[in-house]
Length: 188
Image 1: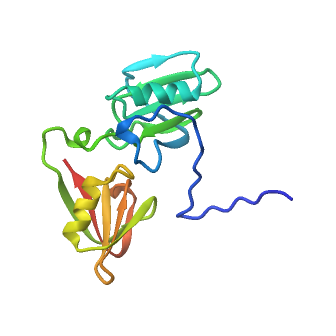
Image 2 (image 1 turned 90 degrees about the horizontal axis):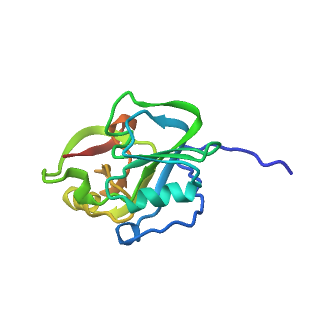
């Protein structure tokens, strides 16, 4: 029986890899988010040749400055980047040979450095993408859930004022669409 491909907005594939995940990522839901056929065009902080995907991703996890990697499977070539596609504009482009992996194991202190975390609020918006319901709360508790999350690299949260339900998300305002929710994005 042929396999049927069904794409749903909130359906995700999780690929199992054997990686050296240290303390900084032990509670995360996943270590990397992959974007196939995409490349972040920036100057790499390190380049590795003749490496497997696992070796490339482990090199990123071992480097506290690694926010993402570009990996060319056919050449076994790995570029380690100290930025992500979310922090540089216009440099995340289609590339049929490359897969882009964003590090989800970045510590909260690496998000803002010595700056203070603030939120930018958009009424009646939601992010269609990866989010996790963290239960029924007030809006301040929802903010704290986002900042302290060990499950994912929280970049925003949605708060449903009718049910007081909180959804934390690794997505940001670039993916926000009109809805009945209050959407807040982290700002450093």
